[in-house]
Length: 285
Ligand code: PAF
Image 1 (cartoon, rainbow, N blue to C red):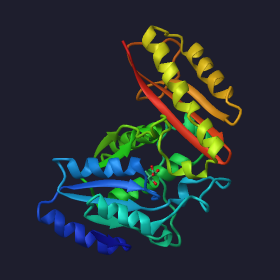
Image 2: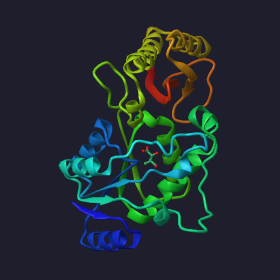
Image 3: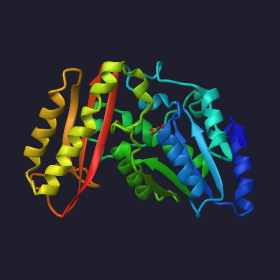
Image 4: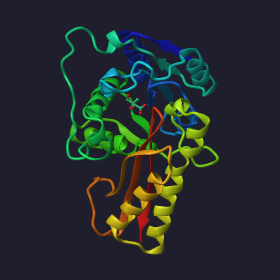
């Protein structure tokens, strides 16, 4: 694996690879790699449309609010590098903050229409930070395709919309949420959980699964489903609910009555200092 810290060096190397006919597959991450990231790296390695696999590790300050955990966000570059090597990645990009945002940096990318709900409402500016860094990473790496986990369903929608609206020549590929045996979605922030909080956090997936089961049984009243999801999570004493929503997919609009197609049931809740999100996509027959 070749590791680059400087944008110019990476671009030079990738330009040579591209000139040699290599198609680039990209996995952008914020590091502290876990099973979810490993699954994305495996997917890119197994992708018949990819000849060269690139992973980036960059904890992006722009996507954290002033009261959020940018400073304490878990980092372990040594371990991450080993994991990227073990996943067989060809290139690792680990820019410093000053490399990505030099003095005087003043441009941002903002996607509207799908960012006013869910995490966009709870974390103002978050998706502007995500869209800005992902645009920069796409411009630097110029991948043919890029992989994102569906655990961050809204992020996936935002990036798809941005790529479409700005005509970015990259194919966005989704990967299903990776879960622990008890259903908890894997996340770098799970390390914040105490033993009791870790146990309590399983309420998220259990509640989402109940909601999905109700939909499959025929419940079509979105408000009733949302109320049920809210009550189930709120019944867990260690959970502090941020949101519980049932929205249309992929345009993330509120719905009164569920219609044929897919819906997204999505939740966010705090367990101690960890803010966790999860979701399920349900087919409405
Ligand atoms: O999903 C993440 O880890 C981040 O939001 C991303 C896409 C790497 C941008 O910083």
